[in-house]
Image 1: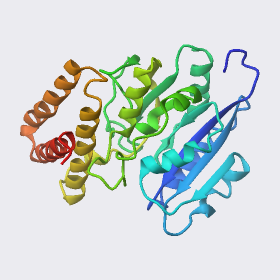
Image 2 (image 1 turned 180 degrees about the vertical axis):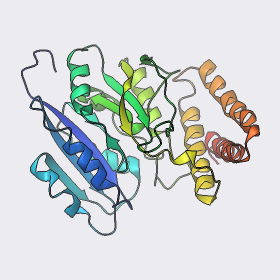
Image 3 (image 1 turned 120 degrees about the horizontal axis):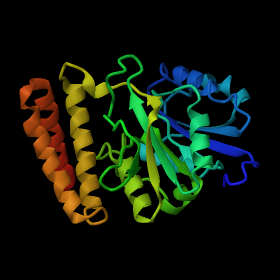
Image 4 (image 1 turned 90 degrees about the horizontal axis):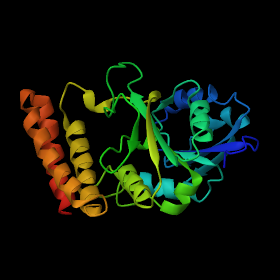
Length: 291
């Protein structure tokens, strides 16, 4: 795809959004800072799941990218992404969150990584909180690593796929993800990555490039919002492990199960961390046994 470095490369950004009008302008501004390069084009596919249209937020960026805007009447992140995938035409596909921010030159760096590494099929980058940089939604390694069943090193918004991977792996599991209407409110990207790896695709994690994202789980106060989020995340992880128990290997899956309970024990030093781990574990058990 990038071998001759002559044909124009296109990014397809799949942005699914609901109830978050205030953060989208920040993402759009960060995207604007990434599209001055002439080496690639950008296609922005917006799936608007809000009651009232937010199409007006994209009027300016539509002059600089190919905008495909869809106002839909259904809910669910995975379902929205699957809807968007039918309209993807780019060479590199990614899934920014509506509250994330692309660092300057991120797309240029991703383009170059793919262009000079033909053996790499998908890439993950690092993440940190845009304000409290020492915090992160997910703590990822500080060194470059291969993405594997054991070390996935990704969140959905840090992943960039060659389109061939998307075509081969297929759809996101609509039982998983935010708004799915199930107890499995996370893990859809891990499921997608495991399926890609099982097909023989190669992924690399690069720690020096960032997508900024609020570190929501680092809040020092435990409340019902955090409780429900932990139940949902745990449910998604349990469902993911049950689904991929043999695909990623029994030994690793058993180790992952023990890891959930080890996390609970290690959290005993802090009431907030213990409560988060406790409800994550409750969610995990329900997800794993599909209750």
